[in-house]
Length: 257
Length: 73
Image 1: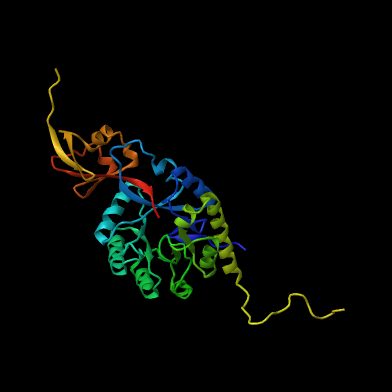
Image 2 (image 1 turned 30 degrees about the horizontal axis):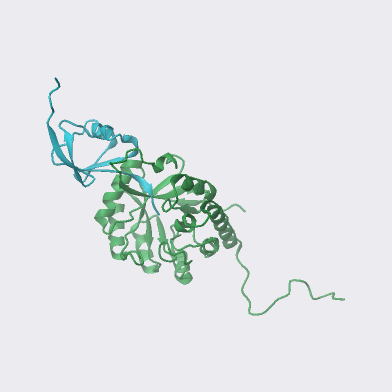
């Protein structure tokens, strides 16, 4: 009954849920949600320090980077050069080479710019980074990214922060079937059932931020997501019953009085 | 009486600032009350490794970026 652990770039993770650290009321709430979620990895951003407030709260004081894996992102980068520069700083700040590449385009939909994403991924891999890549749900691009050496393929389920749930199950499933690196749905999850659907499709994990941070009770939603990911994974491994067009009684018809 | 030291102009996180001459990256962070263990520093687009903060001198006209991790998705 034992499941295989999630393995990304040779390292094992007990949880298949990755959570973001943006949009929370404060870092304490974020830390509480992390504890409730059971996640081993959090995404983080890299920004200038506020020179006028050296005593501002620091993320590292609430979420210990020696206990939780920090996955630095490239949010706000629009070119490969920006992404490499940001992640070099992140590597120096934390010493990790596992990174989340996201090269976005239009603020209206925050869809990944796949041409620039491919170019950026190549630059980062050449610098020794292990790249988990946010990408469109296009199996052709997903294949190119895997062939290039990305360590995880992370197609969007729906636009970032939209909470719409997975919009294209067919494409996500095609990507799952063709990939030999982990496939992690990144973005679009709105509630627990969305996370379960992703896992039931055979995804290796789910990455979410807003679904937890903007829930009325983020800590409770974090716990819900933990269960949803486990439930979806278990259902996938169990193998669902076939769908039928007509009813099929659960109680035997033989022996009726 | 203490002699007034000369200063130099640098750009730090996009702001032009005066800094005393002969200041190392480590001294610069200390004067800003920043914990060197919690930030990363870029000098003229090159990373300054944390192990070299003490011996890396800031020079007139340098463009310095000091960054840290914050919440993100």
